[in-house]
Image (cartoon, rainbow, N blue to C red):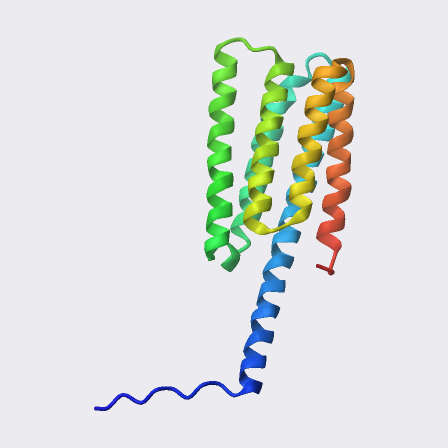
Length: 192
């Protein structure tokens, strides 16, 4: 049997193929954006509640563990609902990054608890770690909002920790509120 090469696509077929690829790319970007927005709402709420409570209640660190566990559960549940996005190579990289982050977060928590680290130092280190994970997510998904979020978190975390420690807790609570507002805008947005 003799091999017959496939004829090249016509200009119209090539244009239609390019248009379909652009639509698929935009759909994926929209999924990333809505998923990222949902994560901002979840974790912004946790920051606003936990840091906000910490401003007024000395024993507020007791609410962190249940909130963080609920946040991880909700985040991974949302991720599991993303379906085909997570089966793509970008989705797998994104999922693996955050799974590794979750494991490292709990290892850091355990390690810091074992050496009786002051809560404020633990918060500072964890928030820098989160900023790094957001930066990696921005590189994976090409979402500029994630890049901006990583820079803002790192700056607020560092500036208030080092220059105005008395205002650290209110600043992080305000950052949580900003994340919720930003996340709601991302979830509701149809524009890319």
